[in-house]
Structure formats: structure tokens, C-alpha cells
Image: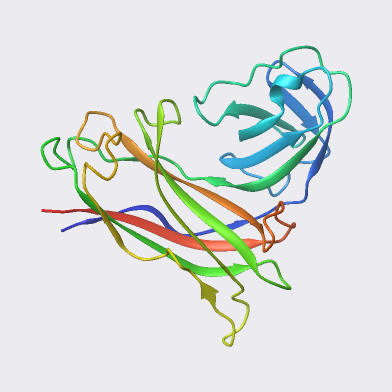
Length: 223
């Protein structure tokens, strides 16, 4: 059976939070977008006036100083809900992988059962432990619209030397049937899966800049 990789040895490093200095037409202005990438997940907070942009968002890097904010649930550009007045912070908390098409050319509607194979090979914030959560989502198209939440894997640890290791209480291969994830549409035309990777400190706070994770996630159909 073939393994289909949603992510392969993908490394993501958390960037320093950015202060918002302006916002208009779905785009916010910050000091610098260097080191950020389209697909990054962020928490926007404290924006005055255009309060609709506050919350969890998917970022598109528009320029060296601007982000376009996308709704993580629909993929639509965030509505501002007013005119920007002042303030705001963009805090980097994770990454959303590109969608992998796993439709009726890979799975069949009659047998959408599968096994997920997660692997984390590096995790560190440079000094101490960090938490991670890898959340798999089913997307009815190739972007993020029409998301159905699915399995999640989580763990914590510190892997900066051979003597350190990651504690992964749920990071193991897991098999799923249609009954386990009834909203999944594997076997349907144009369906896709992606991974949402969230990082935090050991106490659950927003991750510190420099926190890094390297992970892989693959899926295999069951006979």
C-alpha cells in the first residue's frame, strides 16, 4: 500500500510577534514579515476599530510589511468590522500545511478507512520544553473552505541533545474507520487533507520566538 505524505520532514520556526501599525481591505501592516510564510497561523489581538480581524487567522504574506488575513474556517479574507484606529499584535502560533488531495482517485467511498503516521523528529525552544498539537482537517476543496475537524496528535518535550527526548502520549500510528470520523469525505471528488500545527510553551502560553518543530505526517488506506 502507498503512503501519501501530508508533510515530510517539514520544519517550522516561530517568529517574533509583530505590532500592527495599520489595516485596510483585509490587509494589516506590521514592522516586518521576514521569516514568516504563507500558511502561518497567528493570533491577532488588540486591534482597535477593525475588531473583526482579532482572533485566530491564516496568513498570506503580501509584502515585506503586510499580511492578508484569512479566516481559518472558510479561507475567506477576514472582514474588518470597522475602520482601524490603533494598536494590535500578531503572535505566531503555528502553521497550516498545503492540502493533499485524497479523493476518489485514491480512496473509494465504499472503503474510506485509513491509518495516519505522525512523526516529530525535532522540538525545542532553545532552553526548555515546548508543547505541540498536530490537528488533521478534512477540506472539501484544495484550500481551507468547508473544514471538518479530525484526529489530533499532541506531545511535549525538548530535543536539543541526545540525552533529551520528546514525550508523546498520543503520537503513534492510528487507524480510523468511517465510524471514527463520520464527517470525513475521503473517497469523494476533490477532497483533501491538511495538517494544522500549533505550538506553545510547556505551560500552554503562546510559543516563544525561536521555538522549532520538525514533523512528518502520512496517510495510508486500509484494505
